[in-house]
Image (cartoon, helix red, strand yellow):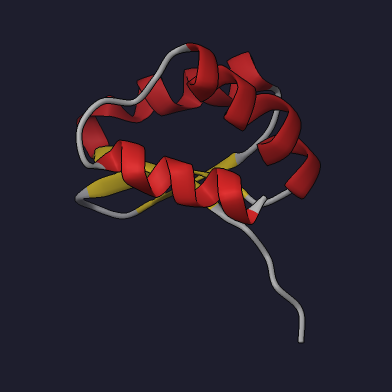
Length: 76
């Protein structure tokens, strides 16, 4: 059995440019969009472990999504 991690951030389609800037900032990931929304997706483990997790450790997530992030860190 193969287990893969996937980090995603979803936004309304009007914020597509914001998520495009994430690709430039983190130098990883890709976008997937439809008529209503857009997703920033990172699947490469080293990018999640070396770029995404340290960033959100430094700039913490507030609210219930912080619990999801803690689960991602434990899994990684």
